[in-house]
Image (cartoon, rainbow, N blue to C red; front, top):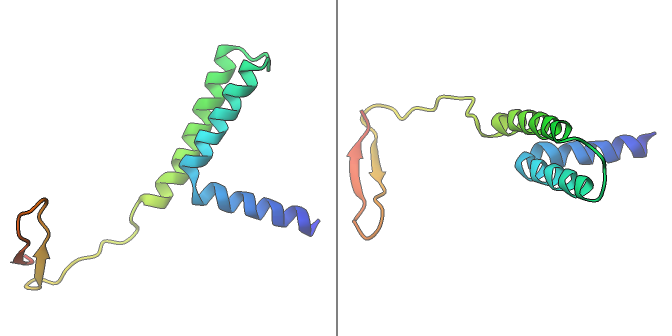
Length: 94
């Protein structure tokens, strides 16, 4: 029983750590299964793809949405990084 729990913990860790990769693998496996004769209708495939995209999108959102609102104290000197060859410049946070 512990081995099964450890396996599931590893799978869940991978799903939550790489939700976009997991979605791609699920959709790829589904497409392969259908192409080799799974026998699902287009509506069934679409429903599974939509469901997995929604659930893993929710997991991905939790990974990238900031939960804090960091702020730079007013008057702090910061460096503004500019693209290309333009020199960086200094500014004061407002």
